[in-house]
View 1 (cartoon, helix red, strand yellow):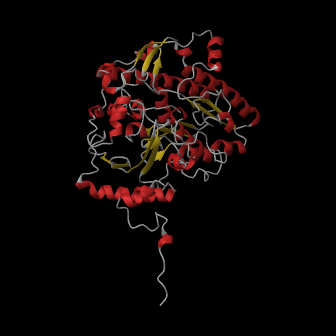
View 2: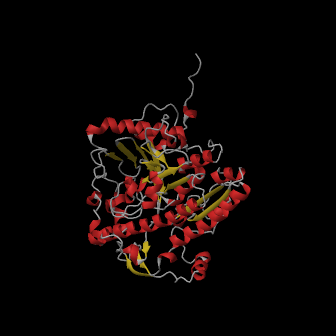
View 3: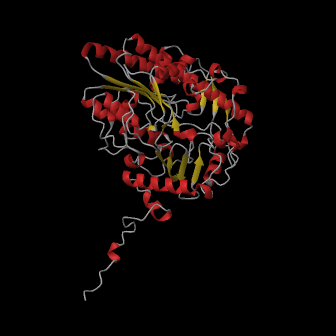
Amino acid sequence: MTDQHRVDTLGCYGNPHVATPNLDRLAATGTRFDRCYTPTAICTPARASLLTGQAPFRHRLLANYERNVGYLEDLRDDAFTFPAALAERDYVLGLIGKWHGGVRRTAASYGFEGPELPGWHNPVDHPDYLAYLEDNGLPPYRITEPVRGTTPNGNEGNLLAARLDQPVEATFEYYLATRTIEHLDRYAKRYRDEGAPFFLATHFFGPHLPYLLPDHYYDLYDPELVELPPSIAETFEGKPPVQRNYSAHWTFDTMPLEVTRKLIAVYWGYVTLVDEQVGRILTRLDELGLSDDTSVLFTADHGEFTGAHRLHDKGPAMYEDIYRIPGIVRVPGQEPAVRDEFVTLTDCTATILELAGCDPEPAVDSRSLLPLVRGEHPEWRSELVAEFHGHHFPYPQRMIRDDRYKLVVNPESVNELYDLDTDPHELTNRYAHPELRPVRERLLRRLYHLLRERGDNFYHWMTPMYEVGTSDHDPSLSAFELQKPPAG
């Protein structure tokens, strides 16, 4: 699993420039899902959805703790999680890398072995990483040439990129792959000696910004290769004002476009660095003779803007850049395939459970991908629903998209409607366009009913605000006011 990873940086998803041979090989030997989405484009809630198989509104872990706006910081003690189900079937559990799934409860609380690595970005001061550097005679972390913009109040903006004065072997990404291989060796021995099955996850912190890379990767791609995203022409005309504010927060307009082009090229270098580490893990799986017995999944928690819509990072805007994610599943004995059904990160939960012989039903918002991997054609969802609850400040959103259109409901300002056939870069909000009124009304009704079926109380806002049909319930709870007329 990677963090904040754009689909369009992978060769198997169509990028002609970025070298990702290992993930491309995984896709070529597995099932690549071309329409895979996150349930919410922010780290902790998305990761909690993978852990539980539940949508964020249900598991209620709705924000990263670093920018928490009053939401829960840990899952409820009685929450269902897939590692608990696997542990009941005597699985050995390992998680190497980013946790970011709570504060009080760590990965070890859910039965995972591995160093505890908290936070949103590479914890380069962690004792286990420092011990790794010392044991291998590697130099400490040091960065130079930081790239920052200027915030509206005149201060330096968030760090976006910098050169890392270390060899590749000293990078946090190489360290994570090394620790993964060490665990894999131990788990393989237990599997051979005792028949003990295992689940092992590597959660890279990258290619999340800031992009901190050794010179080789920092300069690997010529910025002239980079075609700036068409949505860099964003004007925010007719869109929620928060998007323009976020652009200022991320200092986009304070830097020349040449810097944006270089940042994208550096991001590509980060993707290649991560791909090489994935390759080391997959190669070790081959060397151990386990590839024919082991299912491999690759995905990300959400995407990244890297200049698209004049934004960086992620935030309160439900664009494809941050909601569409990579999704690759390789199951031994299954033929390679490409599927275009709408699937989600949350569906990985039921998939893992079914692979392990566990009941997937408790993962109530998840559906196993194995029928699709097996080449079957079951009845499948024809639209996708996603949600957002806030980062830096509360900001509720709900989104529905089908084959052609995307609707986003923003209670605080204006809703959004995009025709992804004629406007794939989501530059023109057509919510108020009269010719699309039938589409708008259809998607509003469909979203409303899906939220009600799920139990997502966001539908209460929609009940009186939109033409979603005659209410069959009393949203005001005012039935006590209705008095029967006196008899006679």
